[in-house]
Image (cartoon, rainbow, N blue to C red; front, side):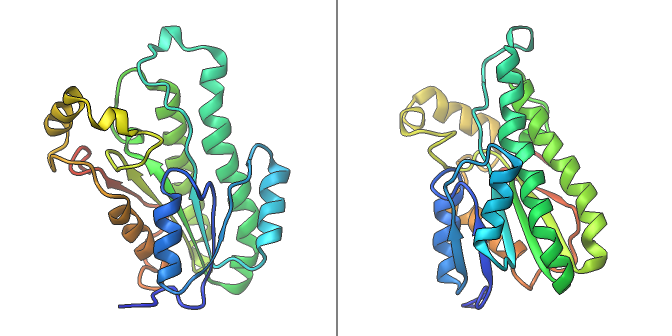
Amino acid sequence: MPNRLLGKRVLVTQASDYMGPATVALFEAEGATVTADDGALASAGACRELVARAGPVDVLVANLASPNFSGTAVTDLADADWHTPFAMLIDPLHFLTQAVLPQMIERRQGKIVVYGSATALRGLKTVAAYSAARAAQVGYVQAVGVEVAPHNVQINLIAQNYVENREYYPPELMHKASFVASLKRQVPAGRLGTAREDALFALFLASDESGFFAGQAFPFAGGWVQR
């Protein structure tokens, strides 16, 4: 079904990173007018200014990434490394959502799609700060989701892991035999998900085809998480 977002105005954050490029390309191909932003979202003011510049927004894609500090034991985690994932993943999510919701509630229509992480749903050692911030995203989406559902506004999260992107799976890692072996051992699907597969799921959640999901976190990890 082509043009599933025809006439929709979409705001995508961190558009050149993480899941941004695949999402922008697919959403534009499906008829959306996309505001692809790469600005820093380090403050509430920056988030609010971005939404104001974007104008009417039918769909917000909260595409937010941060260093995952993998390999750092919780006893060795520096204070700054604890705070950084929250500043990059939680604060912008709240301020963007808070800024975009009034217009959606007034129109009684809107979608917010959050690219999250499956580390929020399954324990993984040496990523305490990152996992905690990602879990906070899930809690936020669950709470806001049920709050705005009566207004016909849906916010949902894709809890992903093992999906190709250069931030978390750079080429040098992909070529390591140890990583390939680990991938086959850890992921029942035996491979990374593609960025397009992920973006297609986001497209479904952003489209008018999905109006009965409220505050859900959907695992997208090739069987690494089962709920």
